[in-house]
Structures are given as structure tokens and as C-alpha cells.
Length: 111
Length: 115
Image 1 (cartoon, chains in turn green, blue):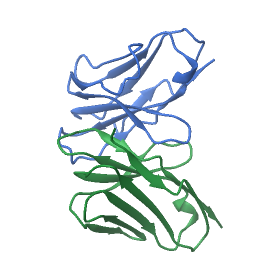
Image 2: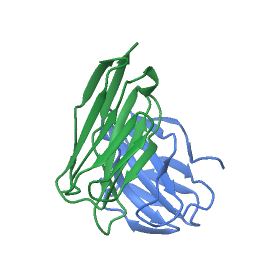
Image 3: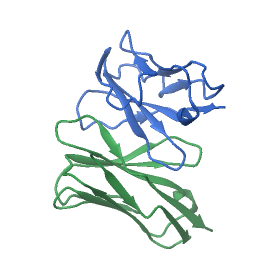
Image 4: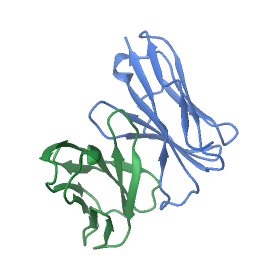
């Protein structure tokens, strides 16, 4: 079936270090969304990527969508303790409203 | 309201009991999704409503799971004869339109524990 794989499962960094999480789909995606879930919280929408090769930035966060629209990445520059949480990618296949979530990458930041 | 609300926030049920989980969407949001999130995993799709129509229920794990949204607003997810494997956080998410490109707004979830 449709799968979205995400790595790494965990990342523990020192504050100020960079962080990257990667997302891969077994099938071509029409778009991909990224969500952040704080400990004990619910997923909160960060961004959506639609176009092949698209790159979007939000302050220290950079999101990329692969040329083949099968992979994506989220890069955080100079992490802060407020970045702590689990980051999920969620892909949508063509002609579907269903989001397929990755298993998430849990980010821990040492102050 | 200001956001998606869910009730109860926590539910403990004995195995075999029936439970009902409620979702109040953001006013005017057409689309409503239910997800199941196991510990350490991403949300897994259960079912989708567009207004009152349940367009997809392919993610419901068994016929013990039933969802409804009779007036196109509040939705209820019912689980009959609960089993231990039903223990999870149940998330409701809504979005403004029916387009694939709208962001989803999640509620706080209901944490169900089946003993």
C-alpha cells in the first residue's frame, strides 16, 4: 500500500546545531505537508509543498520537495529549545484527499 | 469556535465497553477527518466527511468502529466492544474546503485507554 517513510526516528542535538529530517514516499505525491507536534500536543500545520523541486523557507526552517515528488526534507538551522517536538511529513496522492503521515522524527535539543 | 475541540480529552474504558468520542469542528469547515495515533507513531487515517457525507471509511480498522456527522458539523466516532488494541489518541482534523490543498486543523485529541 501507500507508504511514507521518515528518518531518522530520533535526533538529539546541542542547541545551535542544525537538524534535518527526511521523508520518502513509495509513490509520486501530488503535494506534501509538514506538521509539528509538541510533547502532549496535537499536530500543527507548518507548510505545504506542491511543485516539483520546490523550496520554501520559514525563518530558520527550510523545506524541500524532490524533483520526482517522492521525497521531501525539513532542515532547521541553529536549533533552539523551542524547536523540540516531533516533525511529521504527510503526503497526498493524486486525486485523493487522504493524507498519509510518516512516522515522525522526534527532535530533542540540549540547552 | 476558535479551534477544533474534542471531548472527552481522556477516556478509560473496560474491555468490551462502548465509547463515543466527539469532535466540534471550526465553524464552517466542510471537511472533517478522524485519525488514530498510536504512541510514537504518526496519525493514521480512519475516515473522511465532506459536510454530512462520509466519503471514505477505508481506514476504520473493523466494523466495531463507526463514525457519523449527521448535520455536517459535529462528528462522533463510536467504538463498540472496545479492545486493548484500540488504546490510542483519536484525533479529529477539519479544513475549510474540500480542496486537496487546504491545511488541516487538528483538535487536541481524545486519549483512549482500554483496560
